[in-house]
Image (cartoon, rainbow over all chains, first blue to last red; front, side, top):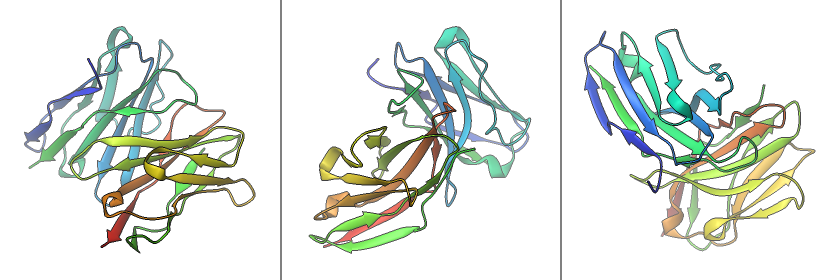
Length: 114
Length: 113
């Protein structure tokens, strides 16, 4: 694929439901990031994967949030028992190397929790 | 831990005038600094980066940024603004002792015709 692909592009869910957001990074990119973009909050770091190393989960806002990356490629961000404050755009980015390289962003998933 | 601050939520500049979007950072090691832009209804795009070397970095669309170590700043500049430069601009930092990239809250740039 040409770029980072995220699905779904839009997700509307009811408060209390679980959601899964998917990210397909650019082939061969070893680094993968998840960010959350809310109005007035900018880009909030959530989690970072690099190769087979343990992920940096320091940005996850609560234990309702988790993410995994299978086979060093596709990543899934899961939000359990969604709350209205989880409504945001969730962005995924990948990078070819761990250091000093620019990020390539997907178009994001717009999550709306009713 | 690294952090980045963009003190202005919004900057208004008349077309043809020079523009500056401010960014300051905090790291414990050496900084890797980036600027990204988000045009309306489009994804985030890389503009430029500073890793080492010349303090003045040139990037896409005529933008440049100046690294100032003593002031821990990395302000984005352009000599002559275009209406098409109107967008949301994000400064980002990576600490040399860490791999994750932290972004600022963004500055909305309005270029007035």
